[in-house]
Amino acid sequence: MGTSAERTGLPDTEGISALPADVPAWRVLLSYVRPHRGALLAGGVLSLATAASGLVLPLVVRELIDNLGSDGPVAELVAAMAALVLINAAIGALGSYVLHRTAESVVLEARHHLIGRLLRLRLSAVERHEPGDLMSRVTADTTLLRVVTTDSLVGGVTSVLALAATVVMMGLMDLTLLGVTLLALAVAVVVIGLVVPRIHRAARHAQESVGVMGAALERMFGAFRTVKASGAEDREGDRLRGAASEAWRASVRAGKWEAVAGNTGGLAVQAAFIAVLSVGGARVASSAIEVGTLVAFLLYVYYLMPPVNQLASAVTQYQVGAAAVARIQEAEALPIEQLGPLPRATDQPIPSPPPRLQPTGTTSAPAAVTFDRVSFRYDPELPVVHDEISFAIPPGGMTAFVGPSGAGKTTVFSLIERFYEPDTGHVLLDGIDVQAWSLTDLRAAIGYVEQDAPVLSGTLRENLVFGAPGATAEEVERALRTTRLSAMINALPDGLDTTVGHRGMKLSGGERQRVAIARALLRRPRLLLLDEATSQLDAVNEAALRDTIAEAARTTTVLVVAHRLSTVTLAHRIILMDAGQVRAIGTHRELVTNSPLYAELAATQFLATAG
Image (cartoon, rainbow, N blue to C red; front, side, top):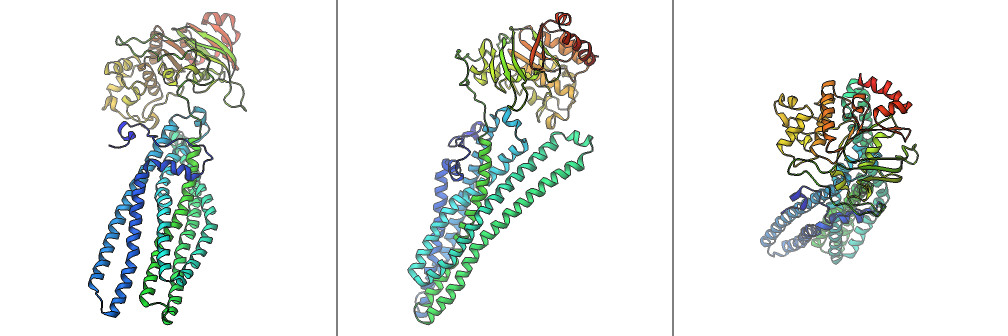
């Protein structure tokens, strides 16, 4: 059947919930494995059965040695030994497979859950973290859950039980030799206890170093052309090699302490073997025990090696896993968007979902936008971006936002989309605070073309229908004609199935911008936000797009951040912003006459960029 994630392709968070960042690592691990407790129990039982079948073997060996001296049956005991060995191997193989499969399932669901969280992160949270480091938490950190699930949780429990059973069997044979064995093991416990904190610190540093390296790689590939054009390959290479070297040093440091802990257990067992052989030999010589008993006891000492090593590995791997869990919890503790209305929203009725595309092909009613004394800053330490700005935009038509760089024009769009929340005041859509809208319904009503017009890795078709996966072939073709992309796509061997490369590197700046515009138009939005949508277009394509925007403004509310006079003059109204405030509102003719700032922009910035 598979999990719900396998059936639907959506992140499967069943059985896993976000826990506070200060929750102990073992509780987080238990939350991951709880949905798989049945499979883990089966794997643990098989592991215990493997250990139990191994504990019987020394008893058969003792009987065999005793029979060799008394002419007792031998063939049957040899056959029993062979059968025990085969059964032990078969049960051990099955148990290892069950545990490995379960551990992979734990990693899968942890990744599904973390991916679901990261996709819902607030924009401000993403901007404060390196994307490469967040990627590392989904890939490298979650991978460590595989080992910690089998080695630490199941391996730790089974090794303790196997160790206890072995010690009981040894005690039934000879308490003196048991005391010698436990003394050697106690020394190992003390050494491992001293090493464990060092393993945790080194493992955490190693994971953080891997995250830094991932961030450096993302930084380099994110601006690959700039790196090459600037001749900065060697400098970026030094940065990457430095990050890789630091990750190596941290991992080696962790490995050093893991090696100390792991070999301490083995050394203790070997010391116990030598001590038991010496003391046991003396006891055999004094006739305190039989030779068969000594041989069986030595076999039990030998059988201590796997559970002792496994227990030492469980302790060390738990420290590694705890470091990874801490980083995963840090990512899960980042603030996420709330899909429903926000608690601090006004007590206005929650709107029904906005109408979608009608069968006739017409868009639903255009939206009205109002800013009511909105103040906002990106961070408490940063300057104010909006200082109690207010304006009202009626449904339909085109409104242009103009002003010097840094005036807060793009931030208007971010507040409408609810990428950020205003510090004070209200942003209203159709007279209802956007915080009272379901986030899904709000963004379904909006088409947005960002300033840098990002294009995702994949095909042109995938990019075009990214915001409207149900778009028909006719609608796609109409959008291509509108944005003057038809000729370019017809010239490509694979047409719409042509791959665009990482961040659309195979497309020109103007082509990426037109793809982004076509993507927004395919949504047939009630509100269309265009942030400098013509900045990378040539004169011919810009003129065509202006006609498209003018046509869209008849049935949709269009808001444009514009720096070109040819675009600004088409607007039904212009909102002039400067230093976080609205300085003037009016048509081009009115503002040229009544606003010295606008007249200056029209005579310098607009005309310069338009010309």
